[in-house]
Length: 125
Image (cartoon, rainbow, N blue to C red; front, side, top):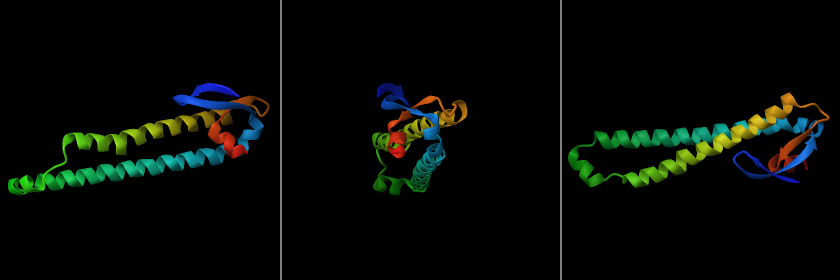
């Protein structure tokens, strides 16, 4: 087993024949794309919620604003990091994994040895 720098972090990579990996790659790619779509939906829901909250706050009278209060900016920044920035980093990593899997599908012959990530290795059994 080799330790290789892959997808931005230290990931254990194994060598496998491409022919062993081909049947699993399409399902792997589909599952990763589904994860990306779910994460993007969560980010969109958060951004929509924030816009509604901000719009409601701005539409209040000055007196109601005094009593309602607003989340401090540093709380909003932490929320942004948690609900937007980190999920977008996760999406970037998933897209790199998809790109790697597609590269294996397109650029390798069945007899070639290809690098397989831990996650794909688990799927292979």
